[in-house]
Length: 379
Image (cartoon, rainbow, N blue to C red):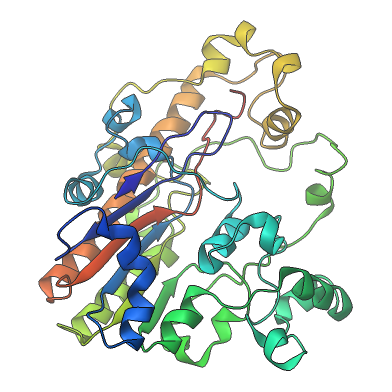
């Protein structure tokens, strides 16, 4: 099952699910939702291979979109061909930590009040409900203070994440790579062997706070691709994650289930990093954003205030359109190359799962935490 593509005023994301050994597409949602309860009731249960990336535009895997023809994505397209293909998916939030917090809890952003990258899940899920005192994430206290974090925890009232629910029902959960949701998940004793990372509490700054006041100033340098990095130096943490996920399968051939392996990358999140080898998977001519080719059709006065703000803060261009076409094209190509690298890396994990006999009776999920506008902030 794969989902993608939203209007350009929103953030496209994607979801791809393949079920091995499941007879019909209609079983997808019910099988995923009932894995834990099936275990507790002694019914046939399913393993889960959860492949995840950050900031991938769903159009690159949407066969109805021209963008799918701009870059080679052989592994994930093969996965899509063996699953069910959806072309509309909605991320709960256009930022990393809030979107992932919604995914981990199964609740909307407004329900858990995780509004930004500075405020994910602030306490161990369920701790306050059980004892009356919330076990606060230490990174929340460092960013704010104990009193404010306690208030946040009471407002969020998070009872559990999928890690809690699955673990309680006997599913062995292994988290590898970027988690980014808070909630003391990184400190869980059952996850220490896998060394997941990213606390979820991004650093606050005056630049971030200035958003609320609509103070428009560049918060990032003008994007310029790093085009000559050796592939193994492009997000080296991601290469470590891939190696760890593959090692788990090597050490757990035909693993006794039920299990869930979560393998999460930062790619293709900016900054743009690529080389001639990874760019070889991208077509020679990629389109430039419509605001650049048709500036009169996208005046400042017609933009939503937030789009206008993001264009300025991310240094996309100034009012005179001072952004050279060759730089735009290099950025677009480099980002697409990062998508191809994501495909290659996660494809290795999927292949290793098959080689080690771990795809039988396994749900394979691929998703991005949210989309990426990659230079299209003005449309």
